[in-house]
Length: 640
Image 1 (tube, rainbow, N blue to C red):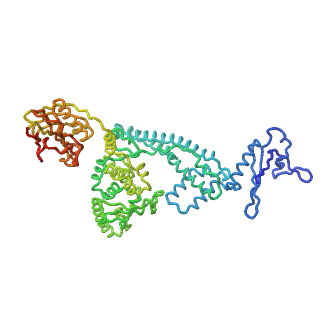
Image 2 (image 1 turned 180 degrees about the horizontal axis):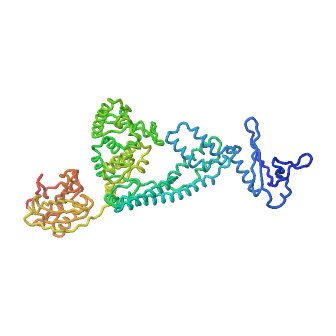
Image 3 (image 1 turned 90 degrees about the horizontal axis):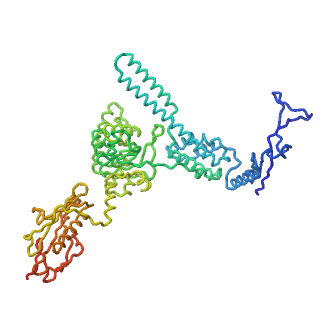
C-alpha cells in the first residue's frame, strides 16, 4: 500500500554534548556538531528547510525491509509528485533502491552480450568509452532521467563546434606549410635566402604538427544515431531485467541522417573536377564507358582478376579478402560468398557474414576465363616462392605474391592508387558496389536479382543505398513517360509533295515513305515511287520515336490527299524489314492512293486496325471493287 510520510528538515547544526553537558571535541580541537533535522525551531519560518518523504515497498529477499527515502524538495507538492513517480517506477519493475551507477550497468550489459559480432562489440565499446560513460556513467541507475541523455547530445554538439574550429585551424596551418615549402623549393640566388626559406618551412611544419595534436573527428549525425541505438539496446535489456522503467533513448530527437546520394560522373562534372579538383559528392559512380576504361587500364595489373570481380560481382572488400578457392568453380561458373575478414584497429579477424550475406553468385564466361588465368598465375607464384620456403598456403583466391591473405585496407589503398594513375575521376573501392548494381539495372536486370547478388536483406536497401541513376536510365524513363501520352506530332514541310500524273497506273499509285532519325530527335521523312528514285516531297519532325514519326507521315499524306481530291486506299508499315538495332532510327511505310477518274472511286476500301504484322489492312474486296495483285505494288480498278 502506497502510504508515504512527509517531513520538513533543515541543515542547521548544534554542538554534540557528552553526559556531563560538555561539548565533544574533534581531534583538531574543534567542537563536534550534528544536524538538528526535524527538531529545528526555525522550521516554523517560511522557506526554512526542505521537504523529505519515505515509504515502504514490499519486503525483499529474506524479508529485508525496503524503505525509499528522498529529500531536498522546496515544496511539499514537489515531494508528493516525486514520491508518486518513484512508486510508479517501482510497481513497473524498476529497481529504485539500487545505488548502482549507469556506468557499472553498461559494462555489465556488454559483458552479458556474448553473441555479438566482433565489429558490433567494438562499436559498442567505443560508444561506451567515448560518449555514454563520460556523460552518463556517474549517474545512479535510479536517478537517470531524460534531461541527462539530452544533455549528453548537447555536449556532443558543443564538442563538434570546437572540433570544427580546430579542423579549420589545421587546414590553415597546412596551407601555410605548403606555401613555405613552395617558397623554399623556388628560392634562388644567395645561399642565405634558401637557408631562411628552409627555416620558415621547418617552423611552419612544426606548427602544423603541434596544431594537429588532439585533433578528433566530428561526431556526425549518423554516429549519434548509432550511439542512441547502443543506448536503446542497453535500456531495453535493463527494462527486461527490471532495472530501468523507461527506454529514454526512444524519446530523443536527433538530427536527421543525410544519406549521400550517389552521383554519376557526367562529362560536365568531370570537366569541373579537372578544373577545381573537387568531387561533387562523397559517393560517385562511373559510367559504363568509364568503368570499361578502368578495366582496360588495369588489364596488366597483377590483381586484374580481383578488380574484375569487384566490378561485375559487387562483393565487399572483406568478402573478397576471405574468398577461398573451395568456394569458386570455374567449370560450373559459380562463386559462393560464405566468409569475410573484418578489420578492428587494423587487426584482422575471420568471421562468418550475416545470414542474408551468404550467397552464391553466377559467373559469366568472361569471369570464368579471368579467374582461370589468375589461378595459373598464382600456381606459378607458388612454385617460385616455395623454393625459398616462403610460400604461405592461405587457400585464398586473391593473395600477396607469397600467398598471404590481402589486408582489406591495403586493397582500398591499392585501388585508390590505380584510379589516380588511370586519370579517371575518383571513386572509392566501396563505390564499385554502387557501380555494379547500377550497371546491372542498366542492363534491365530485376532489382531482386541485384539484391541477392549483393547480399542484402531486402530490395529496399539495394534500391535506396546502392543504385544511382545513370543518364541512360534517366533518359529512358523520361522518354517512356512522355510516350504514354498521345500527342499530335507537328511537322514542317521542307519540300511540298507532288505526285506526277505518269506515276498513276489505272488511277492508283503506290507511294513509299521512308524516315530516318538524326541528332536531337530530328526525323527526316521523304516520299518516293521506288527506293532508288528521286524524292517527291519531304517533311521534318521532332518526335520521340519511329511510331510518332509514322503518325506524322500518315497525317502528311492524308492532308495531301484531302487537298488534291485523292483517296487514301491503304497504308502499310514495313519497318519490320529493318534489323532490331536499326528500327529505333529508321521507318518505312507504303501508301496506296487513288485519284478521281471517269468512274468514281468510292470509299469502298475502308481502313481497319493494324493486322498481325503491324500494317494497316483493308477488309476483303468484294466483287467489282478495287483489288491488289498479290505480292505486287500495283492496285487495279475493276474494268469499266
